[in-house]
Image 1: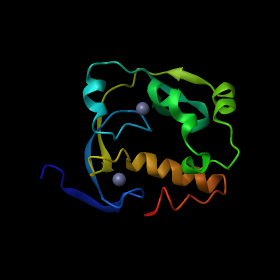
Image 2: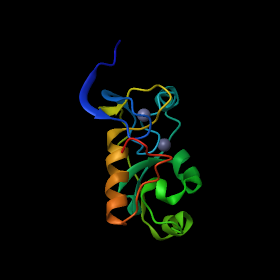
Image 3: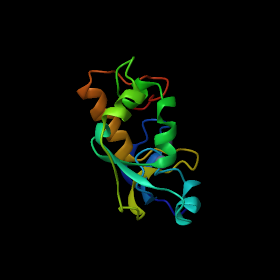
Length: 138
Ligand SMILES: [Zn+2]
Ligand SMILES: [Zn+2]
């Protein structure tokens, strides 16, 4: 096994151990292991997204982000992704290097500790309880 558990933290989505591994800068898909090859081909553009606390998100995920049920991301029911994207500053970032970060060890899970902590904080800020169906281990 290349991925040894490095903490007692488990993934809030799938319950597998969180380990130190290589991730891309995207808050949403950074931990997706299949993305790595594409990332290395330099196909993605990364943006700092104002309403996501200036976290970095890739162009692919930004295009798709409105498919998330808002509470999944700690936003209240009825939150408008489209409006937030319209009102929020987006700035292209040159921070495009992969990093070693704590992320889920499950090869089918895209979750990183950064993502999970962001969503937990966002939920707390918005007084949203994270849906059990998506976050059974939080
Ligand atoms: Zn996971
Ligand atoms: Zn992404």
